Amino acid sequence: MPSDRVGGRGGQPSSLYVIAYDISDDKRRTRVHKLLKGFGTWTEYSLFECFLTKKEVLLLRARLDRHLDATQDRVRIYMLCETCVSKIETVGIPAPVEATHYVV
Image (tube, rainbow, N blue to C red; front, side, top):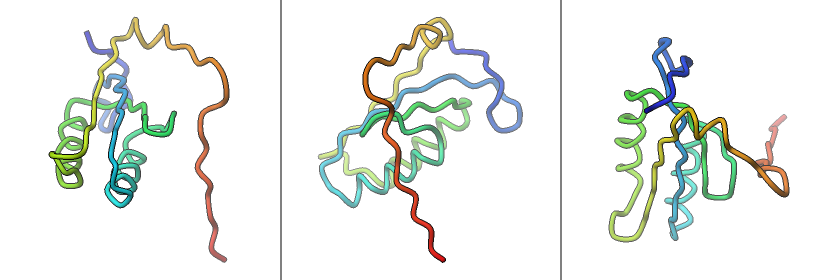
């Protein structure tokens, strides 16, 4: 069962989704990475964690379809139940951090 975490836009219940991608083309990979940053947290080099409502998942899938080449790219979306979320462990180095550039 999905998590009943309330926090999506409009106070709708959301669930944790783990989104992994394998995209060989640099331009498409960059576009997908930027898209996913708008939906969740970058936790590994090709992995995001996103708390999303059902509506947000549909929106994300529609936007992904615009950026992917179905013959070459792969995006996997895993929904985690509330019990699974409470058992997430991280071992090793910290999560990746994107460099922020400021233009003055």
